[in-house]
Image 1 (cartoon, rainbow, N blue to C red):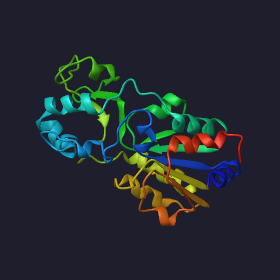
Image 2: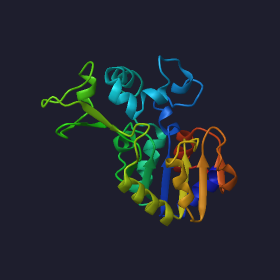
Image 3: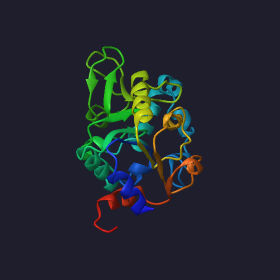
Image 4: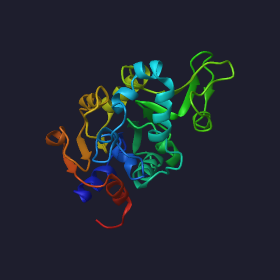
Length: 240
């Protein structure tokens, strides 16, 4: 399978990557649905409630207590998967990364065309005057972070009950629908509407790389159940 993947990538210059939480777990960022994920930990409220727009508006201080502890990983660094994808872009093979992650690690690895479906913890804005802030505004504050104008600083991430950015969706569909190769990695494909984007692919080869089985496995040309970092890194090995 690894050799088949290398051959496919070697012969294409129109590849799109669609990734999820599994891409960043090897950087020490836990996903939501694994054994140790947020959905399997106990809190006063379920994570999907805490990370909702309603909870943010009504229980803002509690939201930020959870957010700082469980959603921000400032010491995380790009892993083999992020680095391999950045290399493929630099080689002119990878046209775009479409990610469900909010950690900014693709950009840290050097990738340029990154479409963040669910926003980024690195961007924050004042809900009153719309001034933008970096991650330090959240990390270096306690309680509810406030702008100089008195407004609440909100992370630029898509919470439950909030819609995805229409422009990001449009561009993602455009890239996927025009791709020759679509590599889907590190995602269970259970989060909608993001997971539904792969249905727009009508190219030559669909590749799925994930440690566990996904609902799209039967439709893929190549399925690899392994570490995405190791798989993508193997593209650049000399062994065939």
